Image (cartoon, rainbow, N blue to C red; front, side, top):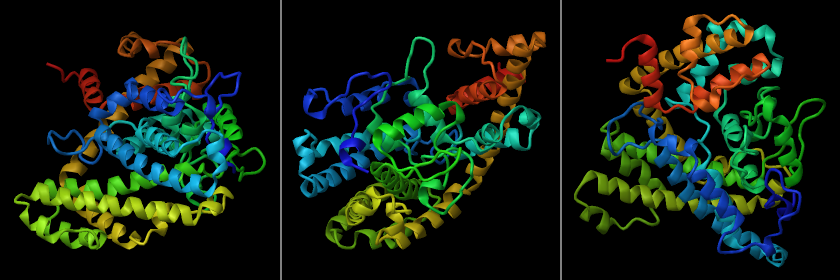
Length: 446
């Protein structure tokens, strides 16, 4: 892969090539990506979507919005540091007009959007959508879909949904947000379709990155960026865009350290663990005198968190640059943090968070509620929508469909498109809105 292709400024519908050296640096194309994402309704809805604790009323616990902003900040730092090193190694890129901050801006924008397709109620929301079709009443639609279409539905994936949010056209809105192909490439952590599922242990094959409805455009983006194809026959899959590794590293760093911090501030993890576990990441940078001058738990944990993130950023950059040639050749099948000198310490922190935070009673109870809500919404809307298109809608179906927003009040032809249409609607709901519609349907509203 070549950086001058990987950093493409092309957007959906472009007929003329956009050259970096012709860009207005006061309004750079990659910065436009960031702005379009942050002003989008899908991004705004992340303020009421679960990061760790579903439907939490605790003011300092992170939601998907604050998590995405923090990942974006970390991603920008990693991107700039990598950009500086890449430009030093490959000075010809500067002749094309590329600058260090371009790398940071692309990674920041892709990081900002990395969770934009996630359903309500966290990762349990993804599972709930898939389970409705795999084992619930949605199983009745299986024989109406191809194998790959069915896999899209039963293995509903937030990453693929995010690509759809960013790119799928609707009436009057061609190309959705019209994000640059470079930023889309950095966003695409899993550049493959849903089948074959996990064909290898390579990191790019861990999940899938696009629905069948978005296959043609995904392939166009990959071709423009010069991504390396790694599938044969009728299957589509590629090696990662190099900057996708940086987006993933920013996410890994933030959820590892900040979810741990949330657990401590919630009292789910003892403060003593903060020093015991984080000191291994910050021992070379900690000011012990300053640390002991901090008088409350939140400040002490915040200080250690900031130092830990700094250490992990520098290590991610080191790993990337040591393996840049392999990454460009499609021969780096790992995440950056898999090869981090702090990998063992991060895994220890994650295991403690899993035991004490992700599987705590409050989280489990609210995930159960989330499953029930999503199952009910899918059942009512999929049934009503399908019945309407088949000409069998009951009076109740007609009333249910009136709850759909205007942008979802149009018909899809194939059963696959119908089901994905409703899944998309449910996925874009906030936790609170999903609960509100559920209560209306169940007659629980005052």
